[in-house]
Amino acid sequence: MIETYDLHCHSIASDGSLTPTELVQRAKAMGVTSLALTDHDTINGQQEAQTAARSNAITLIPGIELSTTWENKCFHIVGLNIDPEHSNLNQGIQKLQTLRTERAKKIANKLEKKSISGSYEAVIKAAKGGMITRAHFSSYLLAQNYVSTQQEAFDKYLGKGKPAFVSTVWADLHDAIDWINQAGGVAVVAHPLRYKMTASWMRRFLSFFKEAGGQGIEVVTGRSNPDEIRRAMLYATQYDLAASVGSDFHTPDNKWVELGRLAPLPKNMTPIWELF
Ligand code: AMP
Ligand code: MN
Ligand code: MN
Ligand code: MN
Image 1 (cartoon, rainbow, N blue to C red):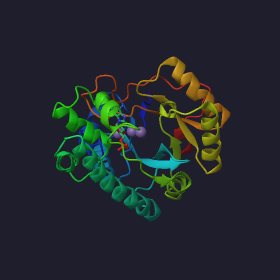
Image 2: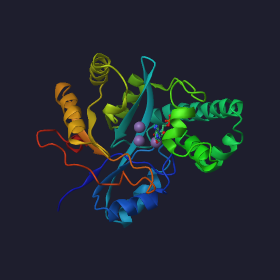
Image 3: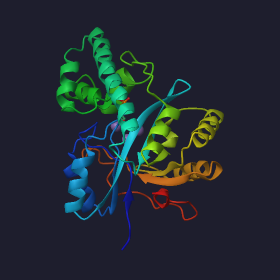
Image 4: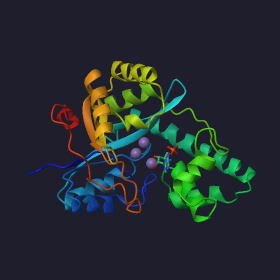
């Protein structure tokens, strides 16, 4: 049987639009054989996803996408094949959850100053007890016709340097890698080409990540073109990191990103699943 891996996606436990069960069912329908649910800073969807995976005969790899800070910049680190119940990891994510709620209040206050009211109540309601992200705010701004696309919400209000941007110190990068490793998982740099940083900064980041116990990097993501795959592959080779593949699927509404619809991993790479 051909194995199809998708090791990065989101459910309603963070900013995805499907329940963990719906997500697993959709992954199955798309031909995925091994799926990792990697919600932002929470493991709350894992149990339901595991149950759904068993009844749909698909392998669920427990995962998470941690928000981290290194040298005042935010990096997303995916933890794969973790024990979701591990205590250090759970203590760590508790702090991130508090940070996210506090930050949501601050974002809402800043939007209020731009005469946009009601966003806090709306995002709390939309998150249904899950992690609140800027994606919840962009959906609200779109629904209320303040913007005409999600991207515009980031460009006008939520992005770095924009009026409703709240600078946040997330988990320390080294700590986050430790939590993942202590929970028996492997730490993976998410979407390495999405960080707007100079080549030399990126090199220092990857050296630090590797030294701190990180083991992988996403080489193929949902919208990677051949040139992007080649660039990510070079990082993997240069820093001796295993290669991961993940769509970063959030919602069926985004026609450009689908579960399991990923370019093949280049042949000469060590697949991350060999480390599970
Ligand atoms: P946060 O972690 O709360 O800062 O929110 C980041 C989330 O917002 C990401 O995981 C994406 O789901 C979403 N996001 C970030 N940038 C954009 C963008 N330019 N357009 C649409 N969604 C975005
Ligand atoms: Mn997201
Ligand atoms: Mn991310
Ligand atoms: Mn993601």
